[in-house]
Length: 91
Picture 1 (cartoon, helix red, strand yellow):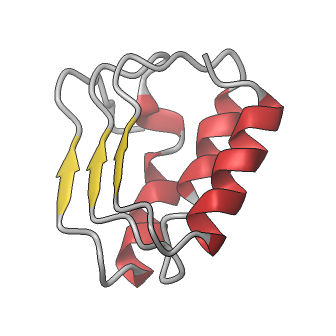
Picture 2: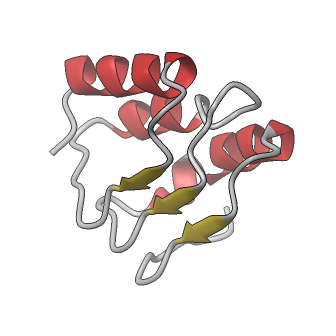
């Protein structure tokens, strides 16, 4: 489960760390939908993650998928994005 503090730490790592290239957040649960949105904003041009897995996230990612899309639009490094078993609804 993501807490607000954990999201801040992971966000910092995403923007400053040049070594992390694989992240797997499968089965993660977020009790505060704003946490995922804050986290997804960090996958922009400053992020060095190449392989990102977001399988079966809870709650569904519908409310924050736009934030991820905007960040990925700026990202030139990510190679694989796996989002299986998510129930994303068009809002």
